[in-house]
Length: 379
Ligand SMILES: *Cc1c(COP(=O)(O)O)cnc(C)c1O
Image (cartoon, rainbow, N blue to C red; front, side):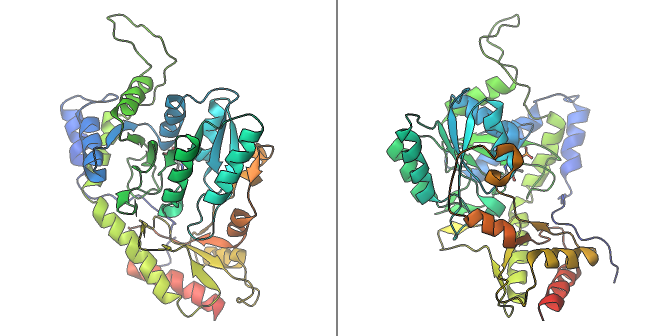
C-alpha cells in the first residue's frame, strides 16, 4: 500500500465536465455568460426546487458581496455575522465600509446562536443603530437553527443573507440550504462538495433579487445602446467555460452528497469506542448535513492529555492533511475591534476541533489509514 498524501477535500470530476467545456469551445462561447451558464443556473434551480432563482457568479464571496449591496448595506451600517466561519463570510461587510457585529455559536450545530443573536440585536438597538442584515453560516454542511433565526429576523425585520457556501445539498426541515434566507450564497470553489474550479452563485426565491444580482454583476449597464450607468457595477459573472464544469458536476451531486455522508458514517463507527472523540452531529431529524467536512472534537479530560494539535501532527507525520476548525472572526487580528456577543463556544470549538479528510474522492484504504493513525494515538 502506498503512502501518498491524503488531502482534506479535493476536486472530484464526474467525467462529463469536458464535454460541456468542449461545447463552449465548439460554439465559440468562450466568454462570460452563455449557454453553459444558463444551463448551470437552471440545473441548480431545479435541484434546489421551490421556485428558486439562481445567478451564477465568479465566487461565493462575490455572491455574499452582491447580497449585501442588494440589501442596501452601506458605509457606517452594521451587519450581524456568525463569528465561527471562514473570513469570506465577513470580508464583504468590510468591502461595503460597514461594521461586522460578531455572534457566537451554539453547541448543537456549531452555528449562530439564536440567543446571542437576539441579545446582540437588542444591544445594538439600544445604541440607536439597527443592523441591516444577519449572516448565518451552515458550517461543514450542518444547517444552522434556522427556525429560531428566521423568527428573530421577522421579529426585528432584519433580512437574512444565508452563507450556504459549504452546504449545497444540506437541508433543514426538508428545505434546501440556500433557500432559507432572503438571499443566499453558494460556492463552487475547488474544495467544496462540487466545484467549477472557482465560482459561486446567488440564490433567492424573490426573482427581483436575482435580476438585480445579474445586473450588478455585469457592470450595472442600463438598457441603452451606449454604455449608460446609474449604479456602481461589478464584474462578477461566471465564465461560460467554467460553467461547463458546473454542468458536469451537477450530474453527480447527489452521489457526492452520499459519498461525503458515507465517509462521516465510516469515521463515526470507527471511533465509536473512543470516548475522547465526539462529532459535529445533526441534533434532530430536522437537520440534514451534506457532511462536507467531517469534524470532530477532542475532550482532553478523556484523552490522557492528547490534544487536537497532537492529533493533527500525528496525521501530518503519516502524510495525512487535517485542519483545525475555523478560527472565529472575533479572534482574528483584522476584526479584533469589532463588537462580539458570545460566551466562548466558538473559541472552545477552535481549540478542540479538527476537520478530517472528507473528500468524495477518498478510497476505502485511505480512510483506513486515517482511522489507523487516530486509533493508534487514542489506544
Ligand atoms: C468557501 C466559503 C466562502 C467563499 O466562497 P468562494 O467561492 O471561495 O469565494 C464563503 N463562506 C464560507 C463559509 C466558505 O466556506
